[in-house]
Length: 486
Image 1 (tube, rainbow, N blue to C red):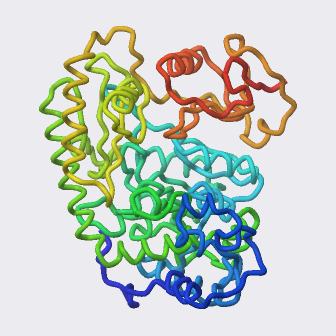
Image 2: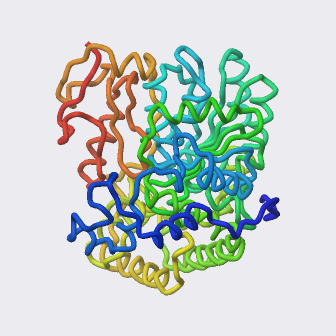
């Protein structure tokens, strides 16, 4: 864990402060946005509140410019870099998808190899489609009981580096959606010793930088870049994120990459939420996340006492493929009560008014962060106990494995842009996919462009559809047809 010792005053929130000053100036707006502080769209102002639409403004000299910050946004970046222990921090308003893509595009160009686990978020493979880099997949092991993919073994990464000495980077999930961490410190060292960058997708690891008893953060481990999703566990508004860089990365180059795809009209609602949330975590994160861990540990104990469920935690740690575990993640295996995770997800929402993060084939995830309270967890535990009592059945006919090793035939970019044809899904076995198929969340592709379609994968897709998983990716919204290479 990074000690919370900051070199500058983290009580500042310069974007927020500038917006407060701006609000008091009563400036007459002859600029965009066209709602003119909400006056032109009273229904929007009533719905969001005048305070909110009043600071939905465009870039101007007193408020700086996200594409080329020189004043208050630059100050906010400096404060964020200090809070996260990074050399530089970029405010991102296109979600962590934008952060991940900018990170990969900054490190890779067409034809470059990048070593990464296959259980990455779609945004990583999207970046490969854009830049033409070649993935070298380290297929993770699978926990046979839980059916989930684990982290990358050190030996797997060493082998991939040894066999691909021309690769430019290694990418690590820190952690996975389920809370599982690879040995990122060792992977960073292996990558650097081979002259490669180490990149981290920390969409679900914001709290690693501020809490105690947490897995090591990417910046503390010496990674070169990290995409951090502040809106998940950090408390900022949806779609706001940070991209962190280390001392070996040119901040100017990364800024140019970001400006290729990120909006020129950065939302001050999102940027101010990053500014305020960074301050909140810097000042109170240690205390807050200590409480979150205590709540998660309490919930795990209570859920496991119900019987049938398995709320897993640090007991899974094996020192390699599960090097560490994020204790804030309340991941619960449901197959032993005869229900798929997505079925429990639907029951919680439809019958108990409880919305959890996701349910998949065998597990559910209740996402705990700074806004949760113990009484809501008690309600979740009670609902799970009642679901088991009312709906438990035999386990026959349930699929057990979330992750299926892909057969990679060609690069994502080549497959995505190649001539293609649409075929019935049931007739696609043996053909090469040219689009994505995934359950969202978690957004990890079942199929990605350039991968061969197998009978096992089709069985998984049909099963997930039948169970009610939210399937996304293909052009055909019904997923009855799929695009394949001609």
